Amino acid sequence: MDPSPVTWMRHLRPDADVDATACGEELLVECRQTFGEHSEGVVAWAVGCTRSSIERAFEEFTGQPPTSEALLAVRREPEMAVIRCLLYVATHDVRYLGASNEIRSVIRHYVHHPLPEGMLIQGVHLYHRMVVSELLRAVDAILTAPDEKGRAMRELSDRAFHYWNVLATEVSEAYGEARREWSRSRDAEREAWVKSVFLGSADIDVATQKLGYRFRLTHTGIVVWSPRMAIDSAALADLTAKLLRAAGAIDILVLPDGHGRVVAWAAANGPLALEDIDRELPPTICLAFGTPGRGVDGFRTTHREAQAAMHISSLARASVGGSGATGYGDVELAYLLACDARLAHTFVRRELGPLCDSDDRTTALRQTLAQYLACDGSVARAARALHVARNTVGNRMNRIKELLGAERLAERRLEIECALRVMDAVGVLDPEKAAEPSEFSAERHPSQHGTDGRFDVARSPTAVMR
Image 1 (cartoon, rainbow, N blue to C red):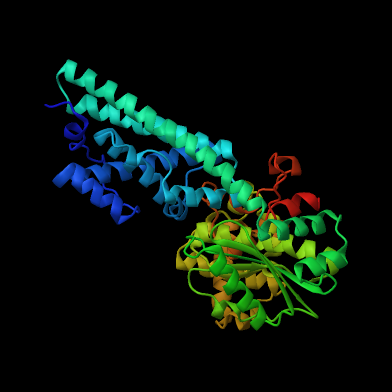
Image 2 (cartoon, one colour; image 1 turned 180 degrees about the horizontal axis):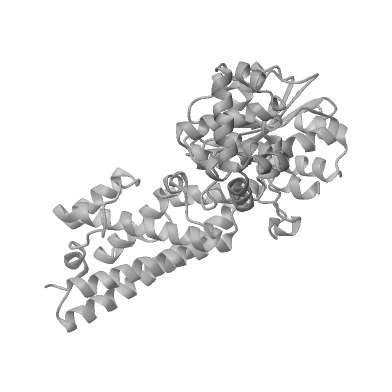
């Protein structure tokens, strides 16, 4: 077989079925021009290789596999980078070298998110290792003649090294440019003022003037996000302001927190009318809010509560697919109990045992037990609250006592009631899927914010206010 890259690369095929690529049509056209009728298999190979690389990157950087939502959100640019690598190796065309406009755009997002530059470069090198390793494996399987195989491997290694080296250099340069641009932006100035309010170093009257937001009123902290990043931060900020005005906000302060998420505060003379906000949310948007708090202390505390409510909402999505609006007041106990998802999983399983099952019969037993405890052990009151017959409640409680033990039910009433609260809020916690999302809720010491003094408003207040 001809050992030229185009020839052997036409035989690339994924090891398993893969989803269609998320990259743009223009790049697919160029693949068809280069690989002809075999382009679909080559692209499918690139998609499968990219997915494996993303999963490996998540494992290395976060210690856990990516969710399907995370894969959907981050796959486009890595797929484009891998396909451009294949095109460069095949054609040696310098048009495919360097960071594309799409990659530069996502770098600007990471600067604002923020993601450290070192982690980005580490990711580029990881993709390099994995893609080249898979390509070398493919060469070994496709070509049979030793001299052809050796020539193809040398050519592949040289071109791939050059491609990823140029990409890493341009990613680093683009990150620096984006960081300098961000530092001059209006959002950076606004975020710096919010940081000073959290740190207690701001003149509140001056901060009020600079931000157009009155800190002496009553505040409600808000986090609004799109789990699939289906809407950019500017559009999300507009939607958030519209929702808060409709709820009765007098002043509104909204800051982007990376792509597909904003943090906000709504000031009013009293609590906002957020009871029906669920009905106003588009199906792809989630919202979490804290309890109202007055003055600067209230401004800080309600933000921390909104972050906590978002954490519980994220756990619920991982477990049962929940979405919509989540108020901290409704999930406070569940948050305090489930801050560590792995320990919370152990706690719920230990206390409820067979009552953790998700079938309809067991769900009815849990609901009955929760109402029975809320009614201080009154079968009659529990039956009225559940709209069922007294005998039904009695029979269910007999079954519950068989499963948990009557003595244990009496001795560990508080623990069992708390475990039921956690399950009601987030479902049955999976210790792998329900691990606390670092992008949402990791509490970091200020020294971890980066050498440039970046302030991550969605995280830092929790550390600052300890």
